[in-house]
Image (cartoon, rainbow, N blue to C red; front, side):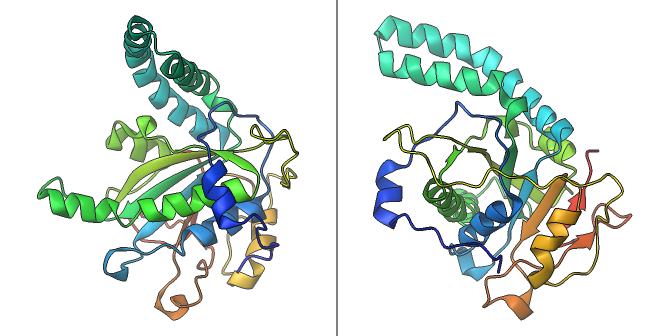
Length: 273
């Protein structure tokens, strides 16, 4: 388990005040807090207890920019249509939403941390029950992550537009063919709560490391925070630990990505392709 203070916000308060925050700030988010949120996310149930999720934490600016380009390629096509439709209906609420979506697309490259929730395996397009069952194993964890982010005082939103092409998304993230990206969650540290104006309790200190710092090692879970602080921020991929750690809810050890990109590793550190 990561050594981080438990989140103090009551569950009901987090649920009632959760919002999709798209106008982000570029303040960094502490690595240990991100790990803590992922551990809470992985407390969610999965179909047949498969625990077949993976979370890609993207901090590499080149990779974030690639996701941003995928996002903008769709937004620039649909946003004008959406805007005209809302104007014809006189729907001010939808116009505000459209502006927020456009703002996020324009500033996507400034997002400090982007989490991509994935499933190990190929999601079948048919029958529909198989498709819904597959997504039913990832979205409970995504909601856990969103609630935990709210309780931690982070801004977050669930989006899927950057994944309009699974092929291009996999290429941008360096994912093998048998890992399916399902949702994108931008995370940002915010200075004030938009609902109350009260400062959020959030650590915004990001430990920078030297370019020659060790990236990989066989560290155990108890050393994970130290490992992250010694590794240059890049793309970190996490999933639930192996059977030996199944009941602990822990994240597995850090390993280096092997020469074969299709080698299944529970937690890989990769650079931008």
